[in-house]
Length: 140
Image (cartoon, rainbow, N blue to C red):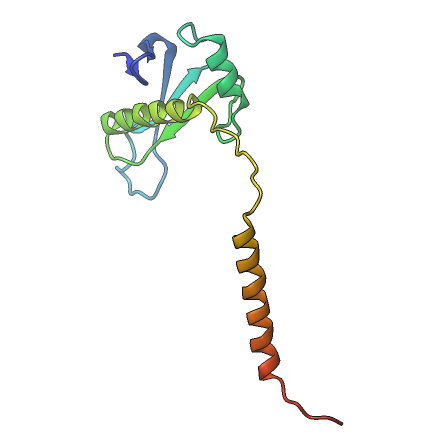
């Protein structure tokens, strides 16, 4: 089952590695005996589907912690392994989608208009007058 990131990128299932373990949390004598926790590992540096530019874009991002060139996502939210697998695949796809977005355009600096400067100064003067009117006028 291939993982579709967008219309141009699809990751084959052989590049995604799975690990299963027992989910943490409270439980009794017969609880938490199934391996419902899912960990998904995608090796970015050894991927054959990603271009070198895409690998570079992913490695530059700060919000994802790359561990030895791999993206690791662990899920233990649901009670069954199947649901956790589906959730892990969705999270990996959304993470890669966010990482591969083009960078936002740089903001061009502009000068404030004369009217906006005048408006700012007028509001400051008005505020100062208001504060001055509150002061008591007692001479010692």
